[in-house]
Amino acid sequence: MKKTSLTVLLIVVLFAVGFIFFYNSVSQTTEEQGTTVFRLPESPLFASFQINEMEVQLTDGVAEGIDAGLKENVRIETIVPPVYGDVTGDARDDAILLLAYTENGGEKMYYIATALKDEEGFLGMNAIPLERKEVPASVVVEDELVVVAYAHEPEKSEGEEIEKLAYAQVFFTLVGTTLQAVGTSDGESVLRGEYVFNGASAFFTPCESDVRYSISPESNSYAALEAIYSERTKDVEPSTPIYIVLIGSTVDANEQDGTQTVDVSAIVGVPKESSCTR
Image (tube, rainbow, N blue to C red; front, side, top):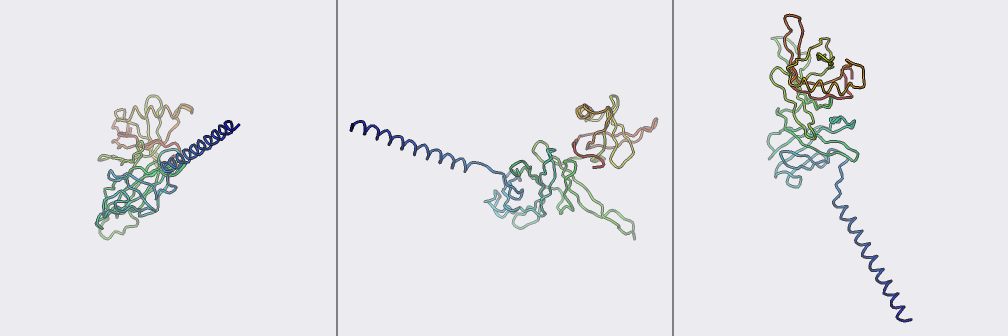
């Protein structure tokens, strides 16, 4: 009887010790997992960004010194509230931040950065420097592009009054998950409008214009435009125009038939939710 009782008691003790060990292991695993789970911030002002090949952590829109991933005496801060708009085409409002970078209290450099929105929060991506050393007049998101505008006075004749400022625009687009400047060569510009391919020829009509330009078959992007058009219009009527953003230049009208042509060097984007009428 005593032997049986001791055996039962031993089993109970072993069971209790095993339960405690298992409970502690589960608790420890949960705690360890809790320390390694990465949660995205609800505000882009608390996201981290790749700046000059460094991972920089913002805290309420400011990063300063070694603790933030910077060198000593370096400060980065947002100078305007974040601008929100969809740059990925997923119908979520991503965030664009205009940042000022200073070292040892010296001259400011300006950066543009993007933080992508998902279900949990904002994921900071890269920041790239702006070429001009002045504060932009505005930063907006249009057609999945980041548009940075600078105000300047247009040229005027002596005694002529300036009624309004002119604006120079710089464009940025997301390539994969990397923000990049949209480069244009001399004579080129960013063109927004409607594109149509009828099986034999391609045409482009810029927004706010009645001029219908022929797309030069020698354009670098001619075949790509045709493929995009075929994909976008496979379930609609033939010759339905699609909205598109291009980099290109206009060519003088053909002397024989008066046809005006656009030479397209690159396709910036084909946003589904945009149109000339918005």
